[in-house]
Amino acid sequence: MKVTNWGNYPVIDAVVHEPRTTDDVRRIVAEERELIPRGLGRCYGDSSLNHTILSTRHLDHFIAFDSSTGLLTCEAGVSFADIVEAMVPRGWFLPVTPGTKFVTVGGAVASDVHGKNHHVAGSLSSHIASLKLLLASGEVRTVTPEGEPELFWATCGGMGLTGVILEAAIRMKRIETAYIRQRIVKNRNIDEAVEAFERNAEWTYSVAWIDCLAKGEHLGRSALILGEHATQAEVGFRYRDPLSAERPLSVAVPFMFPGFALNTLTVKAFNALRYATYRNGDSFVEYEPFFYPLDGIRSWNRIYGRRGFTQYQFVVPRNGAAALLRRILSRIAESGEGSFLAVLKLFGRQEGMLSFPMEGYTLALDFAMTPEALRLFSELDTLVTENGGRLYLTKDVRMNPETFERGYAKAARFKEVKRSVDPHGKFLSLQSRRVGIL
Image 1 (spheres, rainbow, N blue to C red):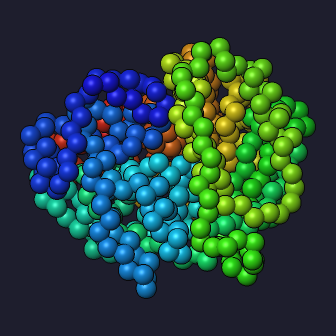
Image 2: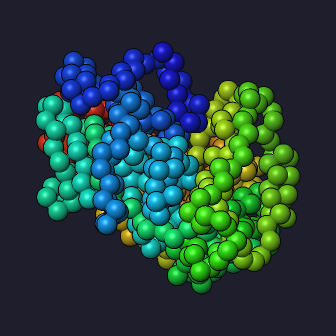
Image 3: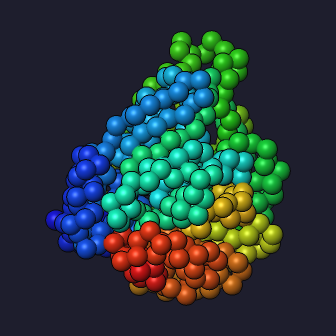
């Protein structure tokens, strides 16, 4: 069957297995020469693509929840959407969540996903008590950060290359309401944006939308969005049930847009309109539009048309970030390859071998897959890696081995751990071959 991920590039022919039990998984792993696990396919590139795929979407059961500690144990195919729907009414929320809830637990662990709170809470791996991992040999091993730290930190962020994640035990976060106390701070340029992040670093959640086509004194103009889980005292009697939020309305993009629909003029107009709609100030909002604003537009990836798109996401060190971001945004604005989705976040420290975050700033930008964009990415790769940064494997579809090795200092150690549990290279993806993880 034809398979692709969220970026609609590449599209490949693949055999897709859909096991329903651990025994099914063990049998498939034993029979196939090589394969890669895959959840809901919301990574942007080819990190969960191989010509043989093991889908975890039917391994989707909740196993246990300890309401006194908030420890949730579930199978790898459970989605974050399933978790928030079940847990928010009970007064619990995910400790870390990316910008979509349509990801599986297994995929989130394999990507070691981060959220708007990384500078204070770290990645998802910081909140995992244990994993059940099926190795290439068929052995099912319970892996903890205390018991097997190297395998644990190779698996979290390891892009499914150490084995099949069967279960995870996650420490949930207690909340009083389903609402977020939000503050918006508009910034005239990237220097103001970085200053605003630093000035508001005590906020739990922070993210900025960036106009990446603005130039001159408005280069990097943005809206910084801050948030805290609202308490019952703060929301008062505004809501009948503070742990119940209305399901937001959703619309669908019904078909692939023509390739010419997104161009410099349309993106520039969209960005100008969006910047104008932001207003400084405080408000209360439901958790869904705060954490998952694009989930209300189903199949929004179709906007980029059949050529597909990719998200170029990088992180650079905190020291000197404003000046480097200014150079990068200047180059993007000059190229005209504008992104209507450009998001800036602040990161803290991270432990995983292939985990993306490092202490610094990350900028994520969506681009249509065009020859011009690919040439631009090569230029940006040099700027990022020469200044101590790296690219996000979960969003990548074209990184070369040199860029990978320069960005991930622990790549050699990861390969050693992988060889120790997968000596014959059972778990491989198109991406792993491309960047030199065999």
